[in-house]
Amino acid sequence: MSGGFATLFRKEVLRFWKVSFQTVAAPVLSALLYLVIFSHALAAHVEAYPGVGYTQFLVPGLAMMSMLQNAFANASSSLIQSKITGNIVFILLAPLTPGDLFAAYLLAAVVRAVVVGAGVIVAVAWLVPLPLPNVLWLAAFALAGAGILGALGIVAGIWAEKFDQLAAFQNFLVMPLTFLAGVFYSIDSLPPFWQAASRLNPFFYAIDGFRYAFFGRSDVSPWTSLAIASATLCALSWMTLRLLRSGYKLRH
Image 1: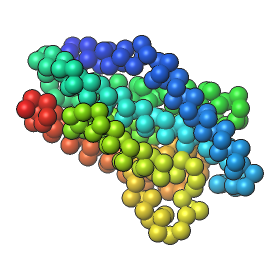
Image 2: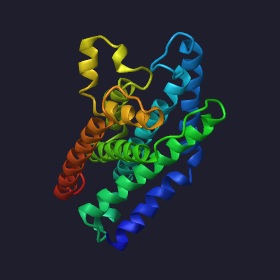
Image 3: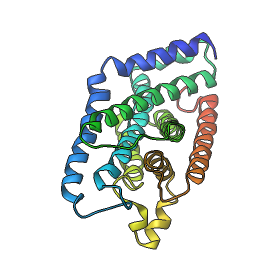
Image 4: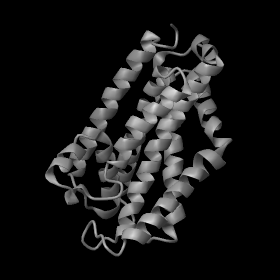
């Protein structure tokens, strides 16, 4: 990677860190509110896994949901703002390869996602006792999930020409896939049709595998989840690099 990559990566990290009250603290608070409301309403009635309380079950799902949404938001909002304000030209004129651009935006999105996810888990640690996670599985699914949404955020930022289009991309694709990925329930509790539909959702595998890192239990084998999440990340990365090399909606 070139020195330009390091500069752009630093710029993208500082961009969200300087307003961390909005980009980090606000998502953590939202996750806490979800936890309080859903655990209060359902904790006495639902046991997702034997021996695992519903409130415990919720925490990894909420942490991963926050990571996915914020990885997407970081990459997509940066690109659309640069396009609308016109300063994208300064990035395109710099001696940066498509790989440099992709890596800088993707890694910055992953950094924000990991910071938010860690914030959610730390914030609830004094409320909900969690078992010590398997660090390798935790890191693998955190990076895979954040990478998928970071790459998807770059695609959305390239495609969108105004904030309305970006909002539509998030509201009609990212948010439904996230909420229907098993954040609040085990897919084993669903009818067969919806179980099959859930297995077509790549976000589900990131959440299910992330939860496995804490409880050693999941709806799908963690190896299967990791393989599907990794394949999704590779496919999105390939597509994103193709878009960046072609200059689609950036240079034309």
